[in-house]
Image (cartoon, rainbow, N blue to C red; front, side):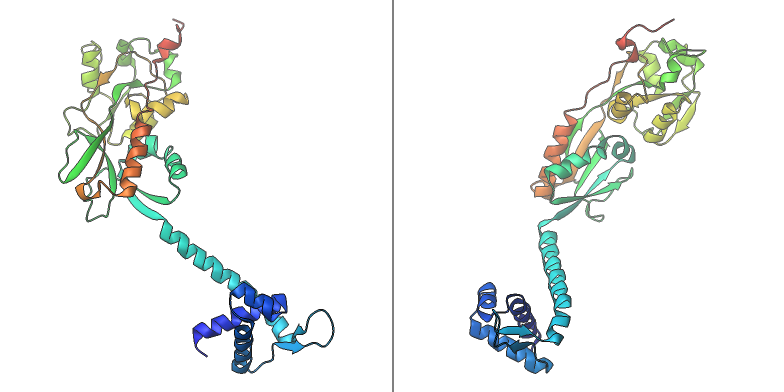
Length: 318
């Protein structure tokens, strides 16, 4: 007996074993009772075993043999597993996986706490987040979408503006008090400056030098001293720990400000011409996953707001 017919025969046996009636099993399988009988007889001949006795009494004329009764639970469990496997294959066909490359700090501080909302809105898309600060070859690395920070122009990629940061000092709430409380920008001379040098090759990227000059304190506070860190998230974590004061930017500090791990001690802020952009290959601009992710990301970016300086909440004791 060929394998497909063997499987059909086993399915017919399982149905007849439940109903103990050829007609009921035939209706379930959408075949004739004669076809069911033929499959059962063929299976008995192939296996050289009797599956049913004919009963002359009781409500049913079919009775399972001991051999048939002993294998029925295993056979039914096997069909259950087979059904689950088929459903899994159907589900896998309906799901679409795509890869997004994201700067490490942006993923840590902004994207990952929001991505569940994308999954809820688009449950059939499986995101693969690639965290990297290097410029990735979208074709070679099979990247569908990227988020990049810069001036908005990258070779062979289409870019869509997302949001622009403002830069301002942030620190642990503990530094608002103590021996040298942060009340004015000039008080920074008493505290360690944490320098984020991850974007030092971009002259437009704000630094402590540019912020202090805008705040009128360049000659009061030595902008060259302090701790230099080439990772934005690590620089902010240093500020959270109370070690020093970092120059934060809107997208990366909004959650820590809202949760009270960081505070913004001064009103002064600095804008930057660099911004976050969604990027993808030209040939991908009409792909459904790219369009879905772009729409969602632009919506999320529109929800970003600045947190008021700590001084705006009310006067602090002097």
